[in-house]
Image (cartoon, rainbow over all chains, first blue to last red; front, side, top):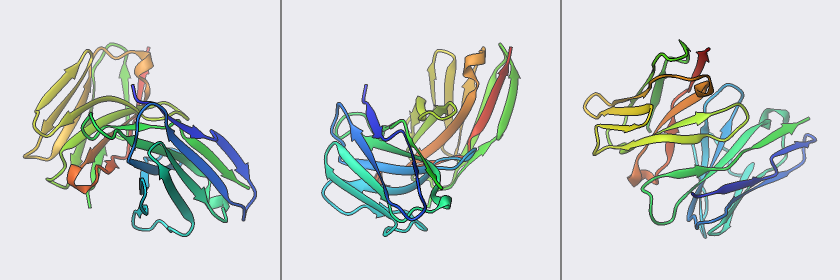
Length: 117
Length: 113
């Protein structure tokens, strides 16, 4: 089956620093990847849609200058949380859509737990 | 945009009993409805999905039904086992809108042995 990895699995950083999270599709090509944020005991909220070779599409209320997304290849998308603050602490999960084949199905990465001190 | 409501938020059942989770969606253009199981600190795992051209789908102890007219879909788990305990999320997406998934609020299921 399709496998999506994320790195790092967890990260602790100081307030004001930037953190980069990588999302990779390991055995398939993904023109589209999605970034979600999940706070404790809450649902997944879509932050942005990452399209290979073009600008990401952000959901309403998500600051594009704070959450920088780069999708430089068909297997890699990165999310950079710039000038992180404690309220950015959350579980960040990416997903990837198969380029050709299964209709609509998305495969999720294992998530990255970000803690901002 | 799409809005997905999920009920109940918590569900406690006795081992062997059935569990039913219901979701409603707002956008009639939605055409794909997956269900995910998420264990604490883990990624969501797809357990079953249904497309808008199908009314029902079953996979062993799990089944999903879709009523497009009423815009609701349900997850049915029969013969529940303790390992079914987890948080379950329904979702809906519209292919024409880039396949973005809109998730329901989740149901925390506890199966008591």
